[in-house]
Length: 93
Image (cartoon, rainbow, N blue to C red; front, side, top):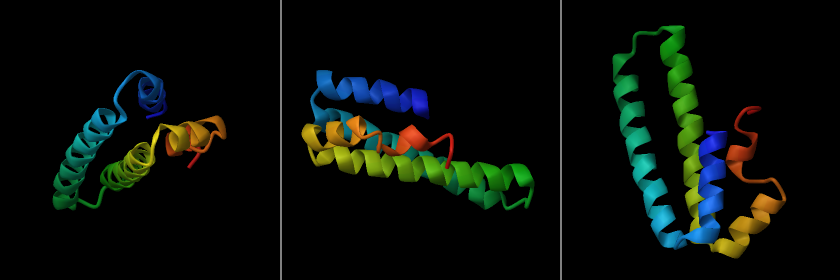
């Protein structure tokens, strides 16, 4: 997730932010679909619970990032410079 976020951040400077936000929203849809499929299994295993929890964290992180990108490059870069983008703390949440 951290690597993906870093790659997306570098693209904020290079690309149309609307296209990047659209790409992230597509990824959110894919994660939501995978999360729903995993939720249907309901096998109660530790692995399934961990998968659901991490998928939920990833989805929330992507939603916040998409919202920041929609708010504009300046706001996004401000959060980046303050090290406040959600993926920057993903390994410690």
